[in-house]
Length: 149
Ligand SMILES: [Cu+2]
Image (cartoon, rainbow, N blue to C red; front, side, top):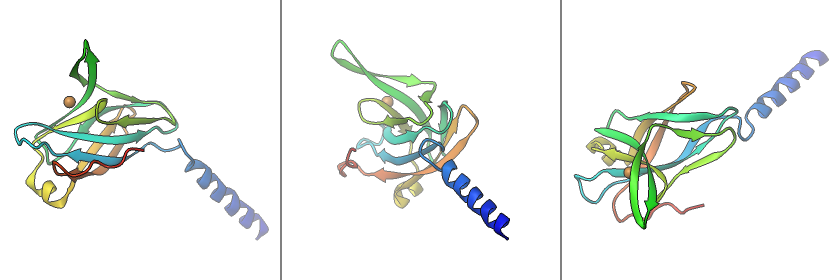
């Protein structure tokens, strides 16, 4: 009886330890800011939290968009430009922010159903083949952006 109790305690503390910070790969604070001009792409932002090992975000898909790309805004000679990224590294235990003026998603053709729901379901694909499904909150043009942290 005592042995079982000790084993239970041991396995519970193991479970708690395995849920500690940096031990799981996840994404949060995902938003899609709809473009005020229908023909222009919308922008997507989120925070990526690294897990126990270094990975990279290598793809992002959604059933309800025409096209989605990973971009980075950079400034050269006072001119802002964007380039397409093949991957976004997410180091173990680190937080990588997709935010205005930096790395972001560019999204074409967000479907009417998702707009109505106010959520866009997307799947993040990582270099270790881990896939994470998230719901990004859709913001209409003019709606306040979420407070930065
Ligand atoms: Cu872009």
